[in-house]
Amino acid sequence: MKKLFIIANWMQGSGLSGGDRIFIELVKRWQLKLNITLFLSKEGSAICRRHELGKINQQIWASDFMSRWGYFVDILYRTINSIINVFSVKTVSGDIIFSSSDFWPDSFPALILKMRNPEIIWIAGFYLFAPKPWEKYSPYRGKNFLTGFLYWIGQLPTYYFIKKFADIVFVTSQPDVDPFITNIRPKERVIVIRGGVDTVSAKHYLNSKKVIPPENRTYDACFAGRFHYQKGVLELVKIWKSVCLKSPQAHLVMIGSGPLGKEVKNLIEKLGLSKNIYLIGFLDGPKKFEVFKQSRLVVHPATFDSGGMAAAEAMAWGLPGVSFDLKALKTYYPKGMLKTSCFDTDEFAENILSLLSNPSQYKAMSLEALQLVHEEWEWNDRAKEIFTKIMVESPESKK
Image 1 (cartoon, one colour):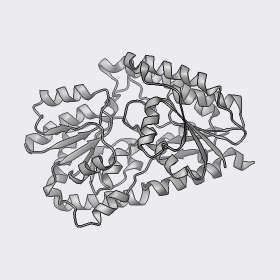
Image 2 (cartoon, rainbow, N blue to C red):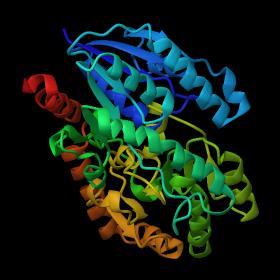
Image 3 (cartoon, rainbow, N blue to C red):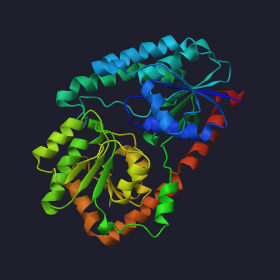
Image 4 (cartoon, rainbow, N blue to C red):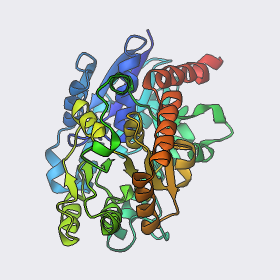
């Protein structure tokens, strides 16, 4: 049985990034097809156990000890830790190495393994190009410029090495394919993962007689994602203020956590929205599904994104969405989501109010959302399709 080594030493906290979700859901469905070993952080190991991967062979590399000293100290610690540990990993020709992100603790050890044994197959996850912090719509303009600059410049070496040495690259949207096409890596080896959704629970609920009518639900809208500048969480609070000016009793629930948690809470209080916006922290599985059941629509206000699976999870429960008209989302969500001019917060609010006040539009968009998810986002189908592409496009299979 072919061996698959997954490096995910950058996993932090208790939440899941899109890249974490991708490898976890793929491993769930590939574990009988491949001999899998996970190289994880302490937090990553706990997350994997919670997601039914406790029986998969694991090696814990980094702890969360250095996270108390901040992002940059933590990433250097985890990178050094990964580089030291990776020299004990033995590989043979045909083994597959999957670096679950482009961050240094995941990509650098994969590069070392590839340099030590060119006959292995390196699959590199590269799910988001860092925005240039000086660009007009960068989420890192202003006071966050230094953080954005270090993120951008820190990604340059990993982009170079992945482009030069990885056999297969996983990206999340079609616009990110071309930057990885080279003379030795054809388009077929740059695979658009996009992500997926486990629709079993949603289908069971929607086919039952317990579906709550939209007008009787607790929340007018829900958000799920990291509280990060790229996700537009501060913009969302301002958008909801505009919604409440016309609909004072409108309620938004925000699922998630992240570095902007305190700023989001402070802005809610400053704008007088404490009775209109509910912060309930990170949720997953059945607890998150209960929120979807009680929500009328999903908002995805990302200002910089390569796609995003969180909205699709909500759409599986029949929730139409509202987003900005980002380039990546044109292929991610071609239907089931009202697109808003970038980055017009007033228009975003109007689109929310339009869906909430127009039953026929709401029903049509809800059906579109369900159709899109069931046709293109079901995890079992996505995992089979990606596995087939890996086996077909593997350089080893071309010999």
